[in-house]
Length: 259
Image 1 (cartoon, helix red, strand yellow):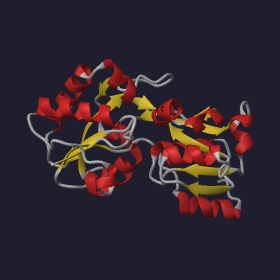
Image 2: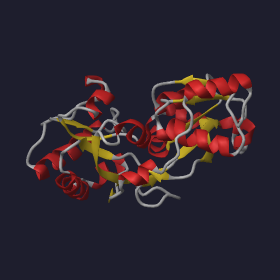
Image 3: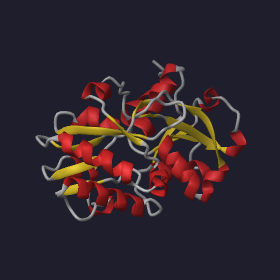
């Protein structure tokens, strides 16, 4: 059986994630002794494995590729400002010297993104820009929110959009974050869902997660930005718009098309 809580897992949060999983496993009465880390395997292999007991994925992969292949278990509530329970958003960041500039000032600028199937790093920001008639001038794929933020700090990109929870963790632990500023926010959407293998009953998992979060020490809840759980339906995720991916967007950039 596989348990994977890798979406906000980094050296500074790993111990808290381990303690969370220990509590979840205790309430379930079964499950692997240790979490699978991303270094142990491809997240897509994990998410689609028939051995998956519990994992966290992203809203965009869920609605575009995983829906119907997994069971939706729950959605975390991070208690985020400006977001209803169970929702999150993206934060656009740029170098600090551009503080106060509107998002329109970044029309035609180089945009760093973590993955073309990321809700917070790609889908939400592209919808946000499109709705305002804006288009990046170039795209830089980085492989992660931390790497996107660092690319902006180092001047390899002009701006990026980060999952707000990732941004909070980056500001806490990465010194380069001091050279960045927030320039805009996207509209909220349902946060990163917990899933299990298709055919698995999600109800015991929801109960175990809910109890584990309630019992988790306050310091660990703060580290993981966890406040509780929300029950969303698949339709709540499927209703979120999906923009064209990086390949089609690069074609639009080459042709100067903003339609």
